[in-house]
Length: 140
Image (cartoon, rainbow, N blue to C red; front, side, top):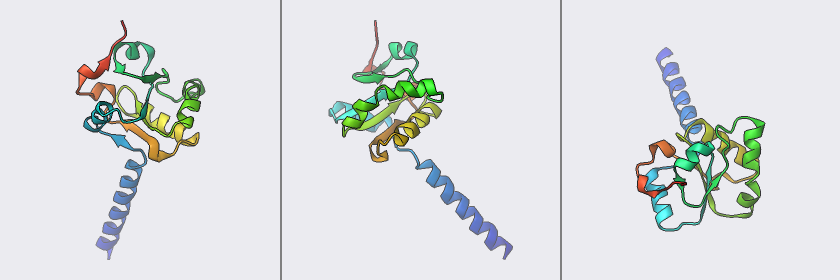
């Protein structure tokens, strides 16, 4: 009986962990590269700090400099581009340095502002994990 309870609670924890992991949509670099190459309509919301954005970003990215998107001031930077995101039906790909906390904060903020989760994606591993360096735009 004790083993059945342990097994049952283990399964419950596993299911809850999986549900939490699926709370945000991630797009893998290969898939995102394909979207860019096929000109799939999308909005790229880049939250990198300004200096990092200048070093490397994607063409047509919306620069917000909102990283890590925790404070009210950082969220206001996201809100500044919100009207354009809301008026579009395009998917939104959030780009941050590593695809972690800052991207998740931005995802949750945009979701709270009424952007449907079906349109929201986080670039897996962010800029630092992007393997196709030739696709970056660099400011001069």
